[in-house]
Amino acid sequence: MIANVLASAGPGFQAPGVDEFYPTPLGEFSLLGIQFAITRITLISWVAVALVIGFFVLAARRPQLVPGRLQFAGESAYGLIRNSVAREVLGHQGLRYAPYLASLFFFILANNIMGIIPFAQVSPNAKFALPALLAGLTYIMFNYIGIRQHGLVPYLRANLFPPGVPWPMYLLVTPIEFASTFIFRPVTLAVRLFANMFAGHLLLAVFALGTVYLLSVPNFSKIFSLASFAMAIVMTFFELLIEVLQAYVFTVLTAVYLEGAMSEH
Image (cartoon, rainbow, N blue to C red):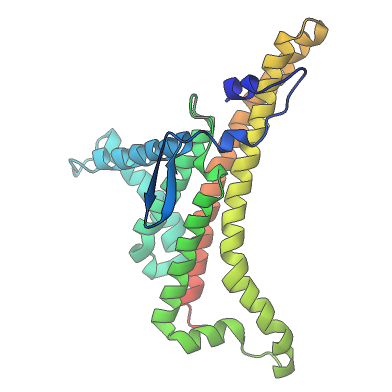
């Protein structure tokens, strides 16, 4: 990250920009008329997915009644989402959706953590396309479940025409409910995750690049490099907290939307 920023830096301190999020494609291909590009960020996401799959495959490879360390770690990780999210939010129906929620959480978490891993140092979720895809999957899923369970017309009526509201108020309430349920939900899911990862990457880049720059200038500014380096360390741990929290929030909100779609009221 620092090397890329320094390579494009001119005289004086150059704040990091968005170039890091648009790396040179390593390979390109076309599928059904759509152009695709394999970039460094794509490879980072593949590594994150491979690590998650590898961890759970190894943890479940030889299950035993008395679990070993790796099996215990895998069961505890899955149990965290199954018990504290799926069961807590969805109740007795939570076990059906626990695998999806756990996959969602660990996929987001692994991609988020890549933002602080050396030689990666950028989260694929810092590009809007990936959070938008995940939010789109959640959007399709909770609407499909709601329509399947209640039927199309009752589902739309329950969402757009809340009971107990005087009918003239529907002129105001219905557009708000439509925007809230069918537009703002996926948008806010995607933007929240994207914005946190994007801002976190730039913040770490500022302090890391600031440390290098302050050490390179030929004056007393070198003494301030220690403060910049200390802030880079502090912000790295803070970013780790945000990465875990954002993965959890995305998963919990998905569970809340699924519960709302299945609810009789």
